[in-house]
Image (cartoon, rainbow, N blue to C red; front, side, top):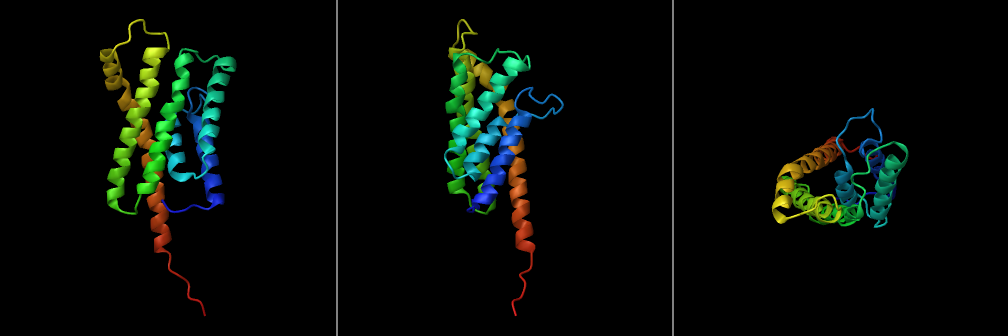
Length: 190
C-alpha cells in the first residue's frame, strides 16, 4: 500500500474505531449491520502504521463488550476465560493485514493475494476465537476436534462473509480513489 500521511491515517483510524463501535454486537440496536470487528483489525493492519493501534482497538472492543453486558443487558454468554483468546485472534487478523500491506501492488494479482490473505487470516482467527471458546469457555463439557470441525463448517463462513464484505468495500473504495486520482489531468505550470 502506498504510504499514507499521518493525517489520512488518523482519519482512517477514527473511521475504523467508529465502525467497530457501530457494528459490535447489540451496542447500536438501530443499526443492523454485520459485525465489522474482524475487518477493522485486518484493515488497521493494512492501513495504519503505528503499532499502538492494535492494543487501542482491542481495548475499545473489550470496553464495548463489557459495557454492553454491564449496562445494556446483553448476555454474558461469550464472557468467559476464553474471551482473552480474542487477543491472538484479532492479532492474526492484524498481522494478516500487515503482511498484505507489504505484499500489495497496484495490480489485479493483488486482489487474489488479498482474498487468500483474508481467508487464511480469518481461519487462524476463528481457530483462536471459536476453538478457544469451545475448549476454554467451560460451556462445552466434552470438547473435541470433531466438534471443532463441525463449528468451523457452521460458523467460519459467516465470519468470513462479514470480513469479506467490509474488506471488499475498502478495496473498492481504494480502487475508486486511485482511479479518480489517476484520471485527474495535471495542471500546466507557466
